[in-house]
Structure formats: C-alpha cells, structure tokens
Image 1 (cartoon, one colour):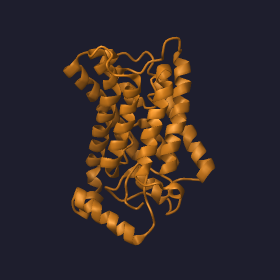
Image 2 (cartoon, rainbow, N blue to C red):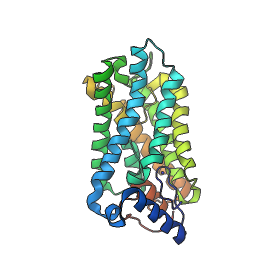
Image 3 (cartoon, rainbow, N blue to C red):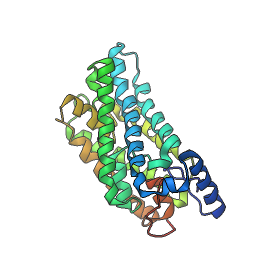
Image 4 (tube, helix red, strand yellow):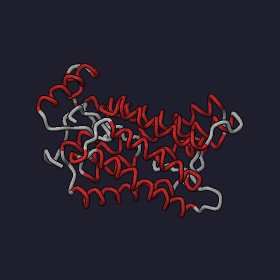
Length: 281
C-alpha cells in the first residue's frame, strides 16, 4: 500500500526507468523474474498473509496476555501502539509479496474497488483467519490462557450494537487511509506505511475501551476461535465489513472508480502479473 512496488499503502509511478529499477529490485529480493511472475507462486502470497496476520495478532492480542501475566505491566497506550507499529513493519518488509492486507475487510475493500481479483479473496481470508488463530494458540501455549487471549469485546456498559457501530466508523477511516494512500493521485511512498500504522495507533488510543479497536475480523476471530466463544463476534464482522464498503463508496466519490495500476499494485503485490482495468486511477 512509486513504481518501487511497495504495498499498502501503495507506491507506484509511471516512469519506465523506475519500473525497470523496481523489477530489478524484486528480482534480487525474490529470485528470477519468472519466479515471481509465475501464477503458481500464489502460495507465497498466501504464506505472506498468514505470517503477517500471525505477527499482527501476536502483538495485538499479546498485549492483554502479557499484561495479565505480569500483573498489568503493559499500559493501554503500549498495547494499542504495538499493532500499529507491527503493521507498519509488515507493510515495509513484505508488502510487495501479497499487498499486506492482513485483514478480511481490506481484502473485501480492494476487491470491491476493482483493484484485487475476487477469486483470490477466499484464500486470503482463510489464511488471515488461520494466522490469527495460530497466534492466539501460541500465546496460550507459551504464556497460558490469560487475559482472554486478547479477545476484543465491548467495554463495560457498551452493547454489542454500540461496539459494532464504533468498529464500522473506525474501519471507514482505516480503509479510507489505505485506499487513499494506494491512489495514483496521492502516492506517498513508504510514508504510506506510517499513515496506516499511525491511524491504527490513533484509533486504539481513544476507542479501545469501547470496542477494542479491532477493525479486523481476523484479529477478533483468533482469540474467539481459541476460546470457542463467538458471543459478540458478529459485531466485529458486521462493523468492519460494512465500514470497508462505505470507505469504497467514499473512495469512488473522492477519486472515481478504481482498477488502475497504482491501486492494483498496492492490492496485489508484485509477485505476478497485475489485473488492471486501465493504467490510470
């Protein structure tokens, strides 16, 4: 997410020379050109999403687990800052592989925007859910069944419906940030990673006591799956998915239709041929 072909939030230009440099950089990082253009390399993208979501949920859920294990030594500010910094790192170190969605709501938004093939969405969502679950099982195995394994639940006095509405609005902002920094009109290069990570931190700082500031059905799925308790999970599916679709509508109002080269590169990564509707956005 410049034609350096980073990912969320995208960086792409139109210079042929920049494209050749980007291609060379990718060859050095991932192997020969045929290696990352081969559609059979989808497993690399899926592994990237699994690994990235694992690390995101490890720190996102891990704050509560470590806090419970150490008697509250982890502050709320630290607990909400860690996921934002982790997302920033993941975007920078392997976003070019898969697009670094790490979130079913982001995959849905990119597909609805026309930047990501719908046929690839189920695979992404499955590995995101799996990565989140593995992270929580790891925390349980190493530290114990503490802190509800970082489950995102409505705060004291907050109903599931209220939590859902807050999650929806938060996700509108998150996905708008992602789609906006992946736009050809507003490419900000690697600084886009700071925008996404910064938004996650900001959202968590003010809203985590209300809903947990998940904005991510996979983030909420991991602890609920490990605990086998999905009593409020619907709020963390409906809210983020609705918010993602609203953000897609806002992106259309602000920048017109998607499907251009910059958004497609941000959404799909650079391990295979892009599927674009045109070269503009």
